[in-house]
Image (cartoon, rainbow, N blue to C red; front, side):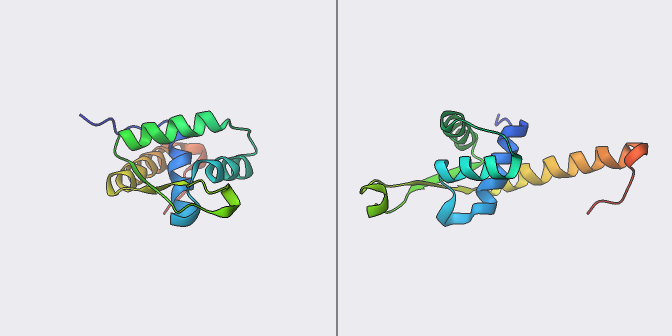
Length: 111
């Protein structure tokens, strides 16, 4: 059975892959965007291992991009969210919104 629960870090990385899109969703750029969006430092190793785990769960897929002179001829591993990954993100969002709507101090209508 595929594990469909997401930890916070996994969820944020999945969202960042979607935000960055097909050209920019590679580990180093994802780490940069994580730090920019959260104000928290992250190791590239943590990003790599989490992206690998998410790909193993079927939530992401990756392809090797073209070699570029800017990278000394090295290729980037570009990530995209799978249909299952999108569903898991939506389910996670819906669950959290449901909880927020039940919390009396912050009860509001979320979209």
